[in-house]
Length: 134
Length: 134
DNA sequence: CCTATCCCTGGAGTTAAGTCCAGGGTCAAG
DNA sequence: CTTGACCCTGGACTTAACTCCAGGGATAGG
Ligand SMILES: [Zn+2]
Ligand SMILES: [Zn+2]
Ligand SMILES: [Zn+2]
Ligand SMILES: [Zn+2]
Image 1 (cartoon, rainbow over the protein chains, first blue to last red):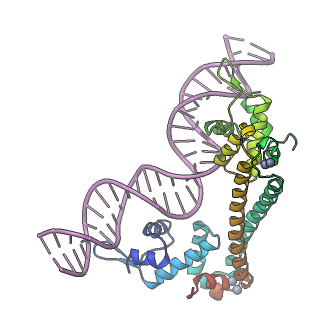
Image 2 (cartoon, protein in one colour; image 1 turned 90 degrees about the vertical axis):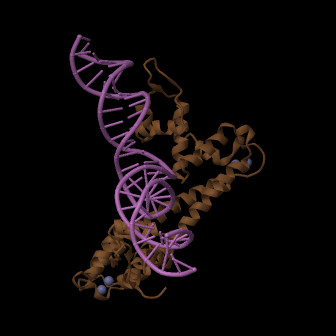
Image 3 (cartoon, rainbow over the protein chains, first blue to last red; image 1 turned 180 degrees about the vertical axis):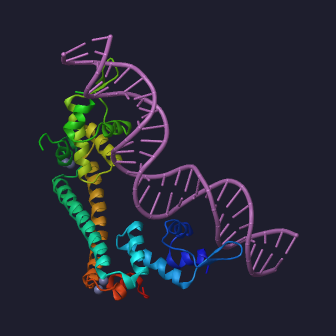
């Protein structure tokens, strides 16, 4: 299969596949005489692996580490894999906490705003942002 | 006060203050003979406004809109301000939902991994990423 | 006057993950 | 042989919010 078919099977752009190759995440199985990349179903699986990891929040750099472990599965301990996963979980939890904090603060000051058509002279949102204290 | 004092009072770098000026968020109250920016306490409040809005998740572009409304408070309705706040809340909620989804999925496959020192040949995390289906 | 510390401008570099482009080659069908 | 669909490379561009740099000027203290 050539690059266009691989890309469309995975719902990504051709450029993305080439970009992953440049990042050493995905190597084509070979090339035609004319220089076209050819991919086997192994490459298809690998691309899907990458995309699944991405959907879980891993960066491409982290996915590289996962792939390194996967390729050498026999000699790598579960603990190394789990460490990566747990670090990512921690990342996600931090982001969740920060977003939760923002959400709570913004909800508080937004609820206090009437949202009407009268002038925002005493708008609680602007006031909260402009407050003297803190 | 000059730029260094303003910046340190707000815990940002001098470059950041100048960057906000380039983005038309914060104009110095004046300049000295020698060309140094000078800031009044009004500018200090404005910078704090910007930083508070940032801490709630607003981008600099959105903060510009907030400032536009704030400057013309008398002629702008509360509804315009509340609209911006609610749009931002929606943003935050979407990110929370996406991160929540990731967290749940990743927790599921991570919990199933033993995390031990034996080879990752059957590691549930690698298996989940490499699975044939879906 | 000398020095240290501040400040100025314009422009380039950073990060992540692509996306797009120009200018050209390959391949299969008709 | 020509057309159209596909592919190649190298490099530039995008977004957001800074951050840093070079090369120079301003200001205060001793
Ligand atoms: Zn109101
Ligand atoms: Zn209001
Ligand atoms: Zn295990
Ligand atoms: Zn495992």
